[in-house]
Image 1 (tube, rainbow, N blue to C red):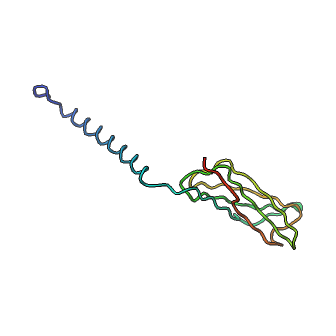
Image 2: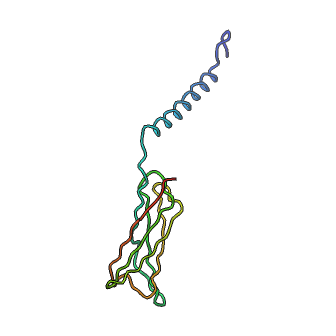
Image 3: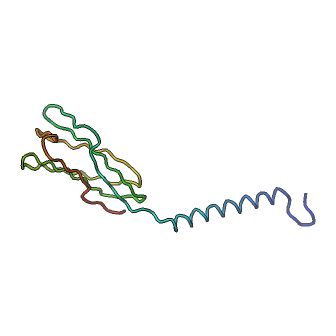
Length: 128
């Protein structure tokens, strides 16, 4: 019911809900602007045991972005040093979102990573 050009109860409820939605959206936007995101921090590590098949050794590697911001062109390098003989390999992940995890596998022909020193690292990345 209206009283001489006033608003109905339904209009007041709709108006209050609309104001609540607008204030919530404005608060979320302000929170993102003020909150500050953590920069990308990709980290690589061995994800499990090495598997051998036909004298090939498969090394599972897990790459985790511990930052809130995405990283692109994440280059992961693995270096195996067996008695002075160094074998190196690298792979590139095109895109790694914030708090995202990707799995990679490195393959060594005839050299067991357990027989030497293994270094796994993220050697570079870009911010998209």
